[in-house]
Image 1 (tube, protein in one colour):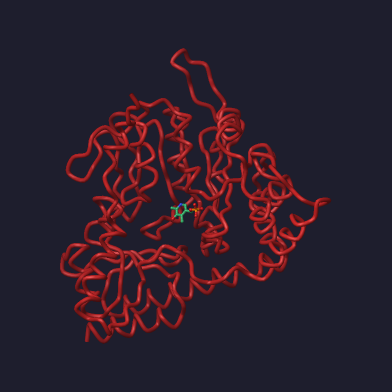
Image 2: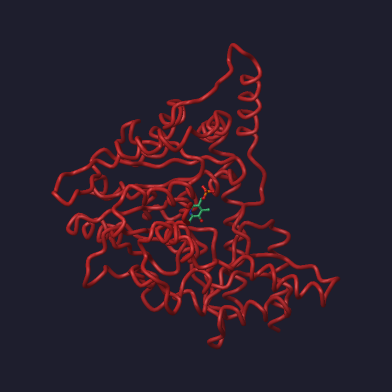
Length: 410
Ligand SMILES: *Cc1c(COP(=O)(O)O)cnc(C)c1O
């Protein structure tokens, strides 16, 4: 008899985006002429930059000729891309990594979700709250999170990040956490972490023999030169941290699919007997079994963003989104709203006025201004009382949405 993995049955249906769609559709039925603007989408809207498009065309041409055709590539990715990553993303920050510590992926979602496979099923995980849902759900799937009560998993340490603590999670007290997920710049709050604060986490991990899984998907949005782009800017991190990168938000690769994961050779975890097992070898073994590499065309596309032209072009797109963010911040703050993020990340995290719930503000905004936001509570219990706006729209639509919010408020 084929039995189901019952842990999958424990997953809470993440109705967030489905619920949003349902409520938007209900509104459309009664207001068929309304022109709705979404500031809720988590996808980019601007096209691939010319350097990337050119590289992809060239790669396709190579694939069409038997003398340059590429079949299966190395599971860890092509050297041309791994070398470009080391040279451009790490060396300029004084971080010396080896090519074998870079694993090209098909996007950070896969690897942030899959990496937990390497860890014992009853490791205790800690997450900042609110949070990108993949981290918890992928752990639920193998039975690591306990049961779900009152909006929380019993075997997960939630570390609230709210305006009250300046969006700085506190180090866990009591039972030590074995695996810590951090995402900076943060989705959904748009907030960042300083080197000093990040150092506390690295020291905690070293002291407690914990592993940090660091999601740097929004690193390209950092403007403040003091904010770290990589956890490896912190001394000791290469002993305790794995880092995930994605070209999705950096270069509009949400549909192209490419990113990379850094697994330093020094990072190891323990057996019950105390033997140290390096995660680099284990991850390589896992990838060689379950992953046949990212497409050659996507890897050539990623390589192109490190050319002089490519760098300039992707920077222009990131700047474009960040102009939306600053327009949103100034308008919303001008209207008296309490806003966070948006300075080093493409997200604005706004406190709802008058203690409204996330969902009631969502509905009020939809009906009052025909603008869609994302209710913060959808990202975790500490997201209640906030909504998220994204900067990934066009200037025109973002400006219009803001005009409507203004008119609605006045
Ligand atoms: C968008 C996003 C990613 C990237 O996902 P891809 O699979 O690379 O498209 C990773 N982490 C967070 C927090 C994100 O918001």
